[in-house]
Structures are given as structure tokens and as C-alpha cells.
Length: 445
Image (cartoon, rainbow, N blue to C red; front, side, top):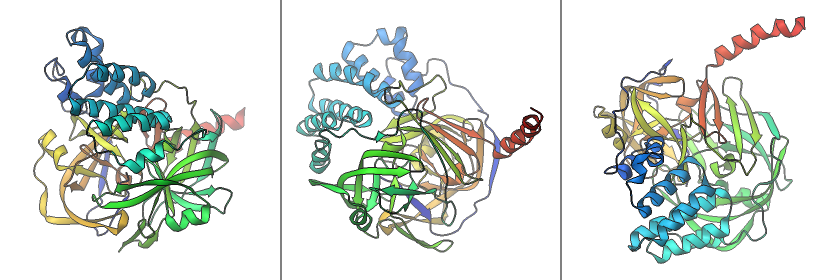
């Protein structure tokens, strides 16, 4: 549910910014009728999509084609278009485990689209077919009733506001909930849902749903009890959103203590289910956050898409040491960037340096020591970042090949465009030079 994390001990944070270059290209025939599912799992989503749209797709039987096409559409952000393909695949599938997987994909599509009752209905189907779906989560999905998720701010409306960043390196914004005084919260794309602590929820008037309790997993796989409920209104900058779903975690869960930053307590986070309603621009150096509300009827995606949804998380397509492609969790709520052992195996990188464990702290004050690997380059958009040291995460469930955290993102002006489904990076120095050159022309006019 959330991958919030900070570094609890020091190691080399030296990085070098380079132009993004690939050392090799894709082999011809990367996707075939024999390996389409495997390549989709590996993160080659655009390539599988192209294969399905061409002659290769015509060689597949109808059920297999619908299943693959439905999953590709879901991961590309076309939640509405994914549903009929997945429903047809479900109707033609007999094996219970496959039916459970398809029903759960349908539940995710409805969840992202904001149709919680449908998400609950498909979740019940997945549950009956053997999928372990928490009953409390489904109770919450079924509680939407007449609520229109994220009402209020109209399409095209914008916000611009200063943000906190540093000690620790997490983006912090002032948020007013239900008209109460503003609370500081973290902008956290690694959290599937917006979160509050129990004491914050009590102060802010959260409406809890009876029986809607589930377990959330943090960065270190720690199980945390989470109650689910609704916020009537949430104001960020000049924009107000109504009917916002939230998870509520025990007090202390969002408290961190590290040597560089001391004790740091959070009241809550704004998760990706809310964030997907906007295009975002983050100017880390200038501590400025901007956003534009998207039309909820928008058809997401573009030819340059490098951002995808998988397992209720946003994933970015990245290169490792110039090799295409890996999927990294886009996590604005994590200080460190990380690679998983699976990501290392996928790109045939050498083994991590076990003699230099890195200690990290996640939600629930869970701590774990993992190893590091040196001189690794991660590339996204126009740039690569070479890390002198980067953490190697042991578990990979739900994170794919790694985590793209603040240690990567904060060197850039970052645009997270959930409309085009792209992560775009810009050099802030180049922006400042461009603005300086434009200023005399403005005066002359």
C-alpha cells in the first residue's frame, strides 16, 4: 500500500548527471506468440501492445488475445477500454486461478476509474475464485454510494504552492481537511491511497466505514492495520477536492528517526489515487509544486509513454547501465532510490556488496539492513543518473525492478503527466538560463 522510506544511516550519496543513452537496442522479434505473457511481465508493455495490434495478435486465440490486450490497456492507463476485453476473457476462461486473476484485474480497472462499487463487485468474484482479497477492502469499495470521487475542482484548474523539502528529503505540502487548520502531508506517489494517522483522522473528522479494515504493507513488508474511510473535503493550494478516500494508520506509523534528520512525524500522505487526477510539475531546487486538474474523461497515454500502472502502483520505464528496459516504482515518498535483486538479475549486473549494509527506515518504524551496489546508472527521459552507491532491496513483490526515489528525482524539474502517462525530466539550470534570456525580451515588448 505504501513504500514511504528514509535512509537511517549514511553512505555515499554522490551522483553524476549524464545524457540518457542506451548501449544496445531491442532485438528483432522481442515479442512473439510464444513469449508474450513473459515479456509483458518483464515490463515490455509498449512492445506487447504493438505485437497485439499487428499480425502477431491475429495468431492468438480470442481469449488469450483479450486477456493480454485487457492487461496492456489497464497498465497503459486506459481503464475504461480494458474492462470489456477483460470481461470477454473472463467469460471464456474455465480455470479458477485464471478467473481469479482476471476478476482482480477488472477490480483494479474499476478502482482506478473511480467506480468503487464495480471494483468491489469484481473483487468479490476474485475472492470466490480463490484470490486472497481482504474483506474489509471490499466493504470499503462498496461504501461509495452517491459519492463522486475527487469532485470540486474542475478540469483545467491549477494550483501552485511552495513545498517543504529536506531533513528528510520528502516533498511536504500544507493540506486543509474538512475546513480544519492545515496539516503537513507528504506527496507520495508510492502510496496507492492517501493516508492519515489515527490522531490526525480524529482531528480532521474522517468518516469511517464500519467493517472496512485491512492490512497495509510498508517498505519492509511490515503488516499494518489500516481503517478506511472518507474525507468530505480536502484543500491543497487554491483547489478543493470533495469525497476523498483515505486509509488511516495507527499513530507512530508515520514517525521516523534518523541520524541526519532526527525525529520526523507525518500527519499523512497524498497517494497516487489522488495524484492521478492531475498533471504535476515539481521544481525541487525552487521548492515549488504546480498541478493541473485533468478531465476525468481523458484517454490517457501517448506515443512517448514511459509511465504505467501495475499492481496499483505507478511504474516508470528506465534503463539500467544503459540497458533497456526495467520497471521502477515511481515513489516521491521515498528518500533513497533502490534496485531489487530481480532487477540486477534481469540486466546481468554484478552482485551487491554485502560488506556494506545500508539501514533504511519505513512506515511503522520498521528497519532493515540491505546491501548496496556501486557505480550504477539509471536512465529516464532525457537523463541518466550515475549513483556511486545505490541500495539493493531484497524483496521485489509489487516493486518490480527498483524504486525511483528523491535521490534520483531531486536533481531535476520533474513533470509527472498522468494524462500523457509520461515522466519528463528537465535540467533546472537550463530552465533558469532560458528564463533569464527571455526576461529582456519581455521588457522590450
